Image (tube, rainbow, N blue to C red; front, side):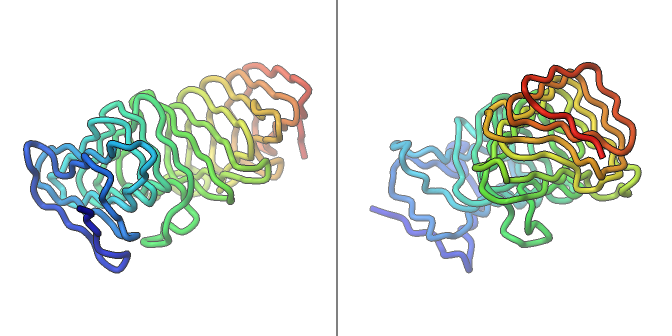
Length: 275
């Protein structure tokens, strides 16, 4: 029969495991009730969130909440709500993950997919996460040479020092994403890095703090989806360090008022704007 979890006012707390699994979803009868699965297993453990029927998206919020917990995915997973690593570690173990938002707490760690981690919303407002699709205060993000893809229908912020690959694909061309450095760095000293490629398919990508330095080491594709996209803000004062820039149809590269260090620009029916 069906299992109905506690509602949003409570949590379904797991402190142990069975045969190496803290959570094992083999059926299609878990009713999340808009609640949270709170995993506090004091060990490395598997969390299998994949139902037999892939059409079911039955997992709402997930929290990892013990310093000795290392929660690993055995396969690709989708979380309808928010993922919070309050303490301990969440390890995708190479698998793809989709969730509404990710919060990495003080001393906690998120080990990303070697494929794609998709963020399709923003935080629930608790502990300062309101308006943030990705909120890393003083935790650790291990990118595993993977891609983080941001989708959604509203403007949102991203707080992280460095990603490997990033894809921006808003529901419309008017959805804007603003990136800023983690806590502990001033507006003028922060340096945000995309260690490989940034692909802006649809929507905008710019700095939340105009004085931050922003580096894209690989390829910057602007409006690769063709329906409207931009990079940067002409009113910014921080430095841009960009590799190979491709500006596609309906795409705009907005140069900084500060230094613009660009290896190459290939303008394919796009626009270069400067204040």
